[in-house]
Length: 328
Image 1 (cartoon, rainbow, N blue to C red):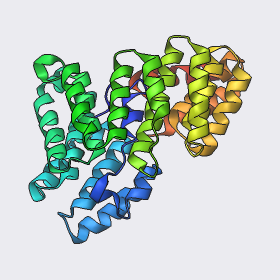
Image 2 (image 1 turned 60 degrees about the vertical axis):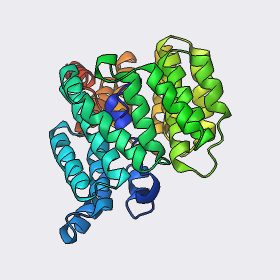
Image 3 (image 1 turned 180 degrees about the vertical axis):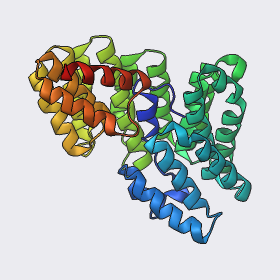
Image 4 (image 1 turned 180 degrees about the horizontal axis):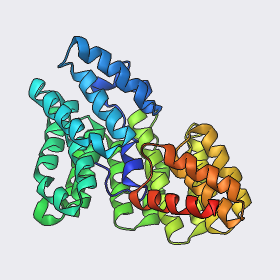
């Protein structure tokens, strides 16, 4: 559950990756490279033959959450329920169910989140209990503790206890979880130092989490107008994860905030070459409007709005408004 990310909830959920036993299958590379439509197509073919296949059910849930359409969140929850019912001892089923519930809670607002908090918490705890080495489940449980109010079962103390328990199993994973707590508590220098000291090795789940942590950290620095700090972090993201768009995107965001719009557009276009997403087109549109290039702006806002997901409700509404203005 990544609902507290500074990156938008939709974007954060789209970074969900396969873990442990279910990671070693044909769906994993597709999910990890965000080819969600292809992953779902493959999962559907398997489910047509084996309706209760755990790997396919988990992959389909991840694909739906990765694509992000709110209209399909209930479907993802039902698939999670089906997976748990058919495979009560499968950690990944409980994890996927919890993440589907989290996505539905994000879309439903605060009351929805509170009413489903117990179900989410229990799903993540069960996933960890069944497979203590399922790092993604541990991370989702950590995020629950950091986001949920105490009355709903959350609390920093519980998050810290989870870090201590994780240290006995995987010290590297524990360091990452500890850095997430620092980030949540706005201890940005501590979070950065810990994140940069982590050596995930060949563990893709830990490497992806380190990347996402640094991207969130850079965005928090940017939100506080600490441009030099933000640039340092995003340059590290680009250096450590050259196959990710986040380093280029983050550097372009800094340039945009500083009013360097031509440089920002060039950076966003480089980011699009790595991975196209709605938010990047939206950002190009904003810089184009600032440069009074209404043709580029209109084209960019149109491309942003053509994506089924990837824009918050506020961003989508603004893109529609900006599109009208660019045509005026």
